[in-house]
Length: 388
Image 1 (cartoon, rainbow, N blue to C red):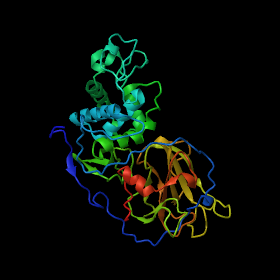
Image 2: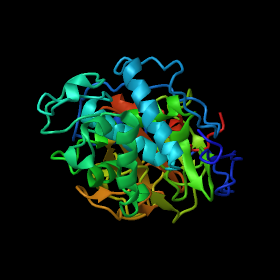
Image 3: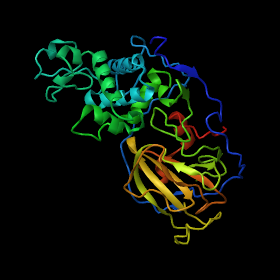
Image 4: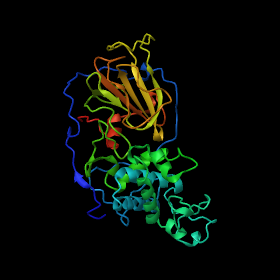
């Protein structure tokens, strides 16, 4: 990419975006084992392929002709097409969030293949990687005749440029959930189909462009691993609160602790870590079966107190426990990344104000679906600032 198009390299020192909270809490006691919850909704799901994210350095150069990463779901040709899409975005000075949206869109439309169409005269004689059959659509983004000539639409760089040009015309596209931004460009008959590709598209952008999906826009550049306090990473994720992890995931002392405890003052606002749909927003019964969330809890009380579960793209679920009051969202509600869902408290099985934060995969809200939230959020560019 040209020097003019390349985002400025900037590094983040811990606490540069948001000050480290000074509350030095002792190990916080909160609900950890599956027995602490009466959670029955959802379950199961297919395995998701995840790429190991590269280190985020701020150097987002992408190679079109170089060696491609190896993946089980996409081959070299498909990943080279993804690199072309990213390269065009860089040349147009589209921020990395746009690269993620564009790659996810092409994943849905063509599985990152430049498709011909037997109903479109001349398309099969042009270089292609397969044949589609969607009306008069061709190419990586399955663009129809109004987007350009057949030859133009089957040129990956042209198709990507037309996508980005239309994306730039979508009001506040960077703040929209990926599926809404993609749908505003594509006008698909399946408007919700793009969301499922967001996680893998972010991983592909990270692998091809030096961790770019882990950045947030700051002034004229982009900063790595700084998505918190309302800043959203290109991956679509943000830390639920700024703060340090005081007790981690399934430690030696707390093997049934299925999340991370983040230190925070009472009343600190909690944000949805990513766009999604609220599954649960209620009081979790304590060990005695009582709905006693409007008072501060104590160790051994049991239960998560006031809590929220949100379902995100890729069947990822996040959980937020020990809220001070009834959540500000309701079951079935759609929320944006960074939207306020409640405030820090100490309800349920808790020894002091903090957020117990969990991440689950495969739509499994039980302990079986729980993964280390510190590692997961770091991969999204929204680290919980754990000291490991």
